[in-house]
Picture 1 (cartoon, helix red, strand yellow):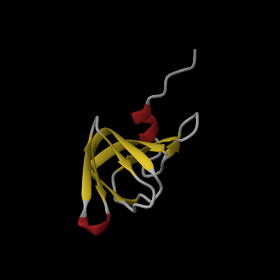
Picture 2 (cartoon, helix red, strand yellow):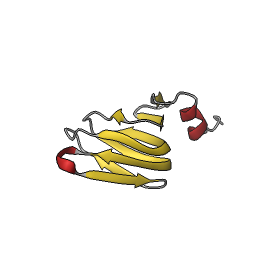
Picture 3 (cartoon, helix red, strand yellow):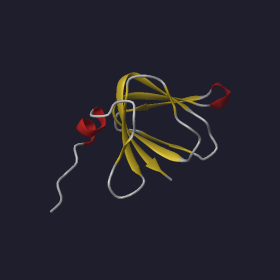
Picture 4 (spheres, one colour):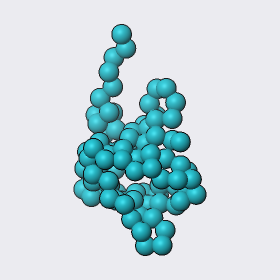
Length: 92
């Protein structure tokens, strides 16, 4: 049986940079500062803290621990953590 991954600890081991997880399109990210989120399609699953996704035209989405948001392709975004936040990123 494979060992379980502790996603929070894994993300904290490399702050501000996504850590690739085994099996494909999964990454985990621990943020303490604003970061460009690109414009590729992605699910953001907040594991701890609160993440604000700053979207075009003055729109934004607040994602709290236990919540998720699907960002469509072509929608530029800025990732803004409220304090420290850990997010699971699932590429579409």
